[in-house]
Length: 408
Image (cartoon, rainbow, N blue to C red; front, side, top):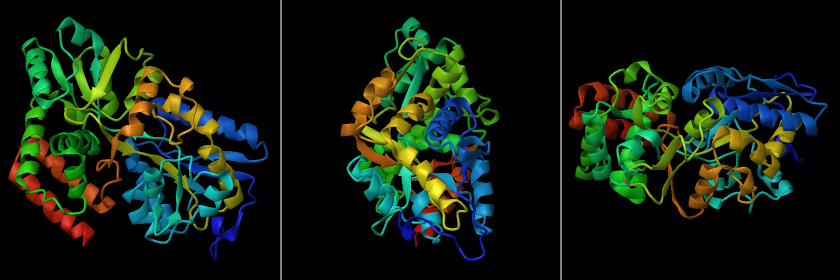
């Protein structure tokens, strides 16, 4: 490898490349099982390198990101860390000059035609590639309890009209229609972004993050009204639950539906031992058929990493078809590579891999791909206030003002 693929900053104590510290927030559900499988594969191929698993618990990385920021600002980076492709990577660590480019690694491994171009663009800035995607998650998925749907003659809702008809029917029978867990602030934002995509379509949804479509546009306000109506069908204790708690309501038959990324499938199958297509079903969230809200977990090489050569070995395994095929079936995601072995995936995985090929890709706000992190934090606060107060005009105005400040 060339010097461009790794190096030691002045003042940093170099390691001996016999260890690699892997920093992530994969500590729960199917994600920990996926990480452990990946580490096992790495150790089989690199018996001379010890893995230090520095995972930090906290939904969607809330706690891990705070710990990472402290270390990066103190010039004490882990050898590699989990980061979502898109704005979370490019507008923070790359913009701050904290990451090494990986173009030589991509060239060496022949990866330029193994990952979709749109995906490589999400981990690139000014022609330089800064991380390696290990997976693709779909954010706009509505999960449902198959038994409840069957017993009540309900079809998976394709439109918002379908959703509200089903929700009203379930509510009259005493069944909570939609499980929500927004104890962690991003939970409510996650639901909102799927409503925005469903009401606006992928093109106008994308315009929101560049300011070409105002949050005060009547179309957006209409979407916010739809979101407000959906919230009336959620469990009253949503603020005390996280996403796993909400998903478990669907698994136990305490609620009928849950909108969550497909890491929920890893939770259903790996932790709760449910059968896809039998115990639970899925469909795109209302109005989003043909769109794919992309969340991709990636790993890069920070400047000043103590073990850059060992880190490159980790990235080689991470970006390999073999690595992606041991990780993703457990995590619940699909491979980022286009040549992974489809036969290793369950019914949901096979279907999603097929849909990903032709879908319109859109970035997630809740998971840091659509807008700068500062705006995401502000949006989470505004959305959580909206969940309790329901003021559409105030939310639209707040999001408009905060985004303008963030992208100036």
